[in-house]
Image (cartoon, rainbow, N blue to C red; front, side, top):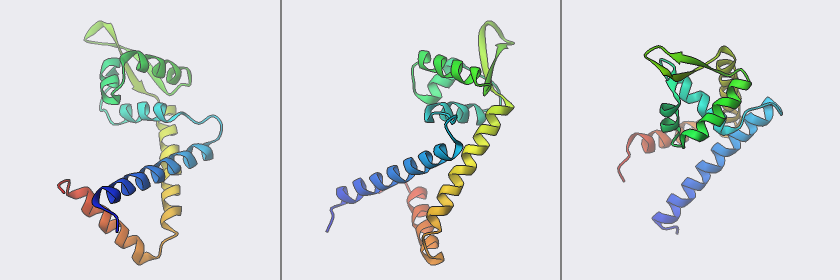
Length: 145
């Protein structure tokens, strides 16, 4: 019988593998021009903000060094996914915002990921899906052991 540590390690491994496979399948279905996972994370950060962000805020949200964000933003801007705009409150600063092309890419990635999840859930009987979701909700809603 597995110990608590073994079960938690197995759960973490299974979740990691499942999510990695879903991301890879989505990227493969978008073709060779699809964005790297780090680029998609950058776009998602911008998507979840109500206003354009400074590079430092993006770096903080991604938990990376500001110079790493600069290269990601350069690439995303070259691909037309983000644009730099002047900060109206500070002439020295630049803000980053998502373009329509960036929003469209995120919608495509999200749709592909949902298709991947639906395909995996389709392997289960309806009662198994309901049980899996109920158990995951219990785990997600109660962070205490």
